[in-house]
Length: 98
Image 1 (tube, one colour):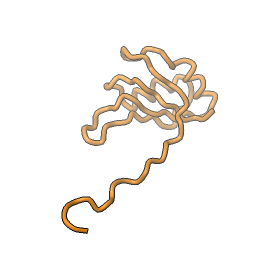
Image 2: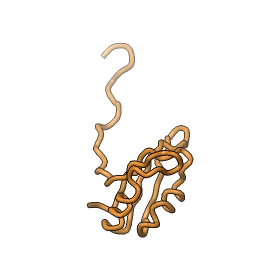
Image 3: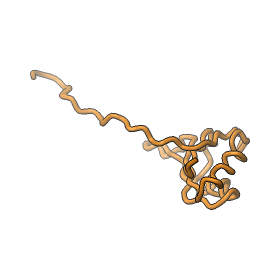
C-alpha cells in the first residue's frame, strides 16, 4: 500500500486546502492537489493526496471512499503510477511536395 491516494468525483468548488483539511483528520498530509484544467483553470473534479504513511492512507480510504462530501460521493483509492504516453506530434504534415 502506498501513501499517494486518488480522490475522484470531487465537487468543482473543492480547493487544495479543502482536500488537505478533509484528509488531515486521518494523519499528516504531505501534499493535497486538486487537478485543474490547463486552459480554464477550473477543477477537473479529481485530485491526489499524499499521506505521511501507508496506515494513515488506508485509514483515509476506509473512512472516505463512497462517502458524501459537498453533495457528491467520493472515490478514494490508492493512486496508480502514471502511465507513460507516447510523445507528441511531429510528422511532416502540411502541404506540398516531399
